[in-house]
Length: 353
Picture 1 (cartoon, rainbow, N blue to C red):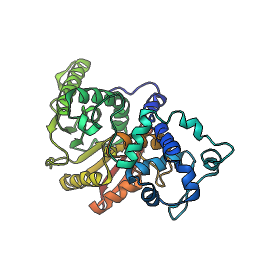
Picture 2: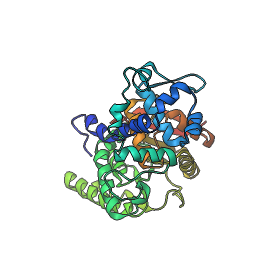
Picture 3: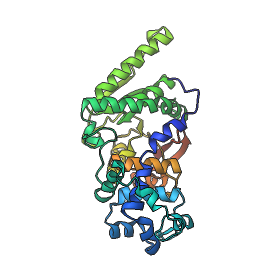
Picture 4: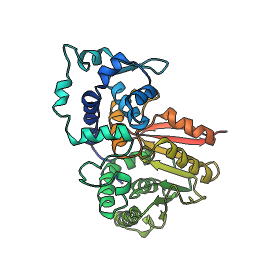
């Protein structure tokens, strides 16, 4: 799999950040959030209780506002308006910009995000009129094909960077959990000729993975001119529900690439717990994603992307310190944190000595 010649970050970022304006508009116009907070500094919990919002999407919203410098947080977790927000986002300010946002208050995405804040249920996937939320939509073949193709566009940039960032030469078999088309497993196996792989996916994405692996297999043979380059002999697809079904017990690397961000904290803990239980020997858990910084004030791109995830999935982005806190009771610690591409990076977790 070829590494792209150009830095495509700007191209991908626009798509990742498309829900940020909807979130901001919902807060400014429908909640008058900044005016309220100027008079009622409080914590995430206090905001949720007083405004009747759910913690998961509200956490993503607050991270966005912290990353933009609209809020500041004191050591006890209390959130206050910044001077920037006091000047532009509060009723009665000479530079009040709320009418500017009121002009787009009826935009469908704004109303969708407001519903997400109040219910924590994912909104319809953007562009799919009448479609169910993303998790339900992925059970339909047409949507699964279109969405997996979209993720493959990103994967062709991220997968070679991931394969180059994680040392796998000494590893034997990798389980790619929720691996989509297999784009990440394929890149890792191409870079490590002695590595075997299993892509764990549910139907109908499992069929897409088998087809993608077969195509990659044929390309490898054509490029090398030898059947020895075959990938199909080293990678298989396991059709399974990653939450309900047993995982293979003979893999020494578990890969979660862009998976945890689709799920709320309890489900992330379940997945990591299953990983720790079934991982063989001194195996590693590899988590490839975009991460928030430890104080959850950014980076801005991650904060904007987290809002999108909070609106269309059951998850959001997480900080490395949050993930570390889930791994520690399982006997794992993060040993390495390496940047990859498009603002993403990879965490390698090993069993604590």
